[in-house]
Length: 149
Image 1 (cartoon, one colour):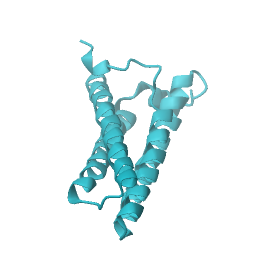
Image 2: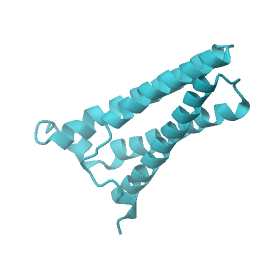
Image 3: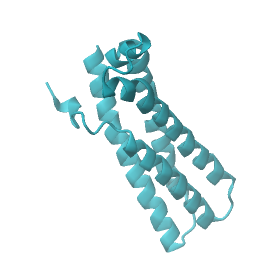
Image 4: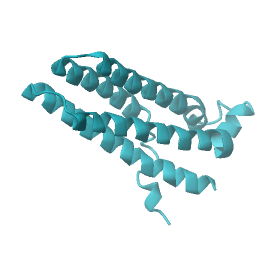
């Protein structure tokens, strides 16, 4: 079961990255073109937020039910290997913070009335979230785990 959920988690990672890229590009063009915000411009941040939350649910399932690294951490073996510390503490907590940052940015943007300020707010908070997420993606693990048989 661990391997199946890990593959799902790996697959959703690409939905999250795609959501970030599409949202950032859309909002950057909105800023540069000076256009008014439309309903479609809210689709990408909402989809990104949904992908992030799906990733959190799958990640929490891994974390609390199946992860051998977390089991080692809870048994006091946090200093045995880098991956125990990375997956047991750093990865989960930083990813959780990035979800909060993106959601905070979306809620702040909804309070704005000027289209340019809305685009800027969304762009800045999503860029911060994207940088944070990319900083704690385990690049040292297989990138396309969901394609492995």
